[in-house]
Length: 218
Ligand code: TZP
Ligand code: MG
Image (tube, rainbow, N blue to C red; front, side, top):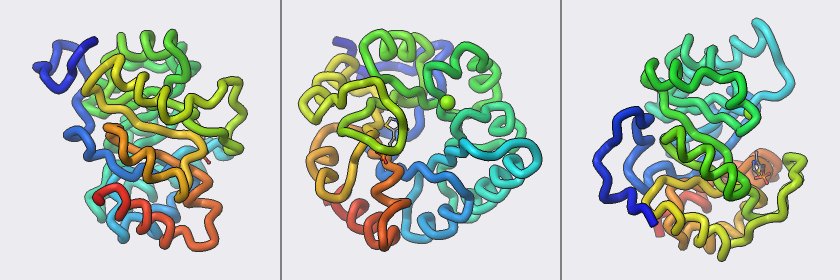
């Protein structure tokens, strides 16, 4: 086991995101307008994950999200579009394993952006960990309808075992996390708890986000 809470920052590491536990509630949203709704509630880390835009329209959405993130001093991660993230000086980039084929992670690091990487199995954890990212995302914890997943959900016990493998490393849990399941995830040592549908498909997204934040601090 490697205890990361004990470590000195290593040569070549990405900057740490935050102190442990500080990623907190981590909504993943597809439009900048969500930042206007969620950041005033105190959400301090958010991911813009756009899968249906390109060109100027996409860039404008990123610019707008960054404008709102700056206004609220929040940490904005951009999914996939690492070049635009560097160009607009956002806080961080979130990449999947398939993105690692083309992405210039060294350019991201040199530009001073944080990096989060998705993992779904041991091989992916090993591969992602070698890049020394700011956090590792573990998913899916539960069944998800938001993304086609060949992976069997880990469940909460496996999430804990996963985290013990790299003790103290900042982990983000994702996949099927809703209000009912939130507390058992928050009771683990996970640094961040990410979700799409539980907030963006909710009848009252603000109320759900507020309840989750309360559970996070309780
Ligand atoms: N990566 C692992 S699970 C997932 C992603 C992007 C989808 C999470 O969405 P939801 O709606 O919170 O299950
Ligand atoms: Mg991707």
